[in-house]
Length: 355
Image 1 (cartoon, rainbow, N blue to C red):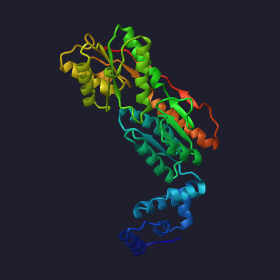
Image 2 (image 1 turned 30 degrees about the vertical axis):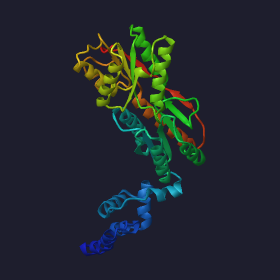
Image 3 (image 1 turned 30 degrees about the horizontal axis):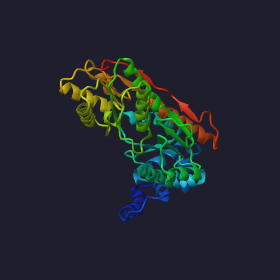
């Protein structure tokens, strides 16, 4: 039985304070000294807490809090070959991708994995930089958005054999696995619906297509469906904008200036659609009597505004949770075995008052 007094604690604290002032990290030996246990006991309490008594574990945890010690996950991974960290790379963090991230974490956290998040701003070069940064931290797997990536990303992931799940679109040739829906078919379905409503002069308000296969596929779906119906869809009927309310209004103005006779706008994002709807209301254009407006995503605001927005509902949360499940399955098997390489979660056309 050992008894320590305030003087002992002061002596143990002294070197720690000196290292903090020098900018050095607190070491496991500092925790052991503070807790009055061996370094091996500290190591076991961190890596395999069931192997130490609750009393020892409590003393180690208290000492870690008091000293500010943070276990080195990278050092631990050298022995276990796992960091239990997964990285997700998304174009930007908004409500849509936020739902996907929530789906990912709801699956990863109960399995003992943590999530790192990177934002590309729709730049494949930024995605490559983030991929390299996450791989340098030895993440166990990657969750990517879309299937358009630089050759550098493809080669690095292929050479390292890092499990990857792509999301938010579909392709017959994913890097590893992919889960999502067909942006192309969803856009065709919405365009077909507007045509079926008797609309003939349909403008398209889409996101910028550079480095964005989802925006490209939505535009392609609109063009192909309009072409099948033998309706005009030339470049003057299309406007490309950043996915913000303000830009939706500006894109609507652009389309109306070019084609005052348009009777519908299909916006490939609810943010653009809502911006267009507000601009029509401001100009005294009746929606849907004069112009029908349809969006894409089924964001929360689409059902809260008046008139409520017709839109495409996509499985945002389910894409995240399913992607995380697929990634964990790959990690558990430690080999390239698949239940399904391509998982199509589908979409739904929601008809509301704006059309």
